[in-house]
Length: 388
Image 1 (cartoon, rainbow, N blue to C red):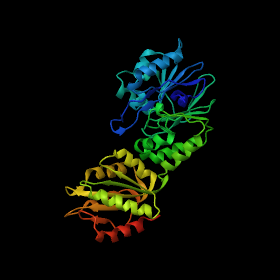
Image 2 (cartoon, rainbow, N blue to C red):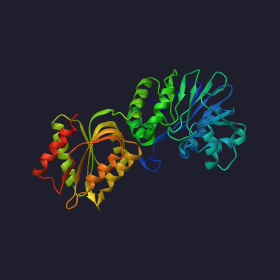
Image 3 (cartoon, one colour):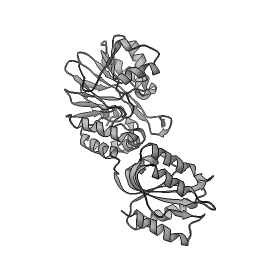
Image 4 (spheres, helix red, strand yellow):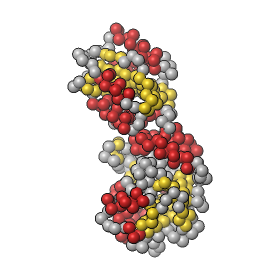
């Protein structure tokens, strides 16, 4: 399958975005294997462009646009989201077509001057909940989606072909050319980009449930047609902060390898007892990968050393990210290591106590240097406490 087939909507609604297979870091922090910047054009009596693309995709976007337009001109640019990976080319497009109207929320109109040194107020149409725009055969209905995941966000429902343009909702990391299954990159994207805003996603899903949707067209990743029910159900689970996997995620941060050895031995013991366990070395894996797995699994055991009277930084980084992403509704266990003044366990527990509906299993297991036979009783007790 060509990657362009993965973003085909219909004969009248066409992809004009850009696939970026060489990008390695998204938003200067997330490791990715490329990404797509999706934009669409609706060909009708009046032509509408649905968002633009990141500056990395400028050339491809304007080439695709020209190929679709020929000698025609767009009447509207629909701005669903002002983040630069989708809005970077608004200024250039607006200059190219001075009669084109810009359509978006009140917040979008207020954000435009922050990114572009131009006054678009005279050609900006502010839309509100359930406002419509008729293009001819196609009618756009605008649905507000604030904080999914910026305050100005809206999504757009095209009524004749029943297409939901979902902004960053249902988006993924990864280039389209990689031909990955949707969920392979979607969970990494969701929990790191949108995950904090579960309540707002739930509100949007409630609105979407009243629509008859044949196609979901996001701003990153493939278009959904045959898998809409699966995508919506998955988003409902994720945005409710419910786990998708039964098992124990065990991220660890080890300085000299002793904590790592203890964790891997304990993980093998748990697996032998029938548990599904996924371990992750936080000194080798990116924190975004650990955030994703923490949300996917129904239980977690963290293990880290004391360092300068604090938590060893790779683990502290994970806990900070989990806190700001609203990690919640899980049972967690804690393993600490400290040769003379172990304090990491206490400080890790304080992190979890600041989160919603987190149950910290007892006991907190303390290793002093290297795990010994005398530590086995505490590990056994923690295994019992973490049992499903």
